[in-house]
Length: 336
Picture (cartoon, helix red, strand yellow):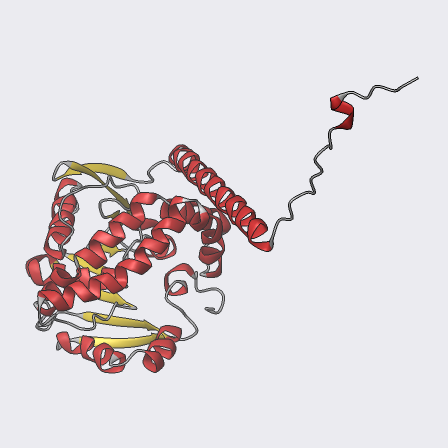
């Protein structure tokens, strides 16, 4: 009896071995998942930032009053009574709340007003020019709208000190004296050409873009409270400062004021170097001096020149203070 074998049974079945995947395959897969994770984190960060900004607006309403200046709303808060009024100008990217300690202490003796430039604090952002003359003109109009009569003693911190000098030069009849607190020192004072300014702008824009990206994905607001508490502000004020400084429009405003507007700022500053015998107090944080005198070429000569802008000036060093604690510390504990 013969056995019949079907073709399907006699056909040789192909055998295959799993294809071995090399290291490159796993590297590519790992990079793909890394890119996906980064994109997801960025999207989550942007969403977190957007929600946090809206919550901040609800949790931290304006402390003072809003007035219309050149078509946009500007914020100013005044405390105390008396004359001359003290006007407090914050530095680059900073707002009126940075003066929280100083304003509360000075208001026991006279009227004290702190304000926010457009795009900072509680002031509405603007797409208009952010050159120095425009900025001091906005303050001049704001003080008129708010009914704060001259004369003023005007104090400015950091870049605010430069705008304070420019205001004094533009409106000398309104100013009874100025205080320059840890002033920004502009180096160079002038640009030889447009190309030199463009090169300077490119160098600074890279840093600004990086910081702007960190702000837009919410990382800035996670680290800021510690910075303000280290400067001496109470925890609740530190949290409010962090919220105000972590909004997208703050980095955009700072870029417009201090980078795009820098050439005009240096020119206006140079025109404000002869203040006659205007009473002028120049205050320095000792830690600023220690750091910049050593590491910034020309800083010593530039800072020593500032008191010469007035024939009636005095200079004081605040021992132990740094650029933030010179405003944030209440004076009851040593500066950090």
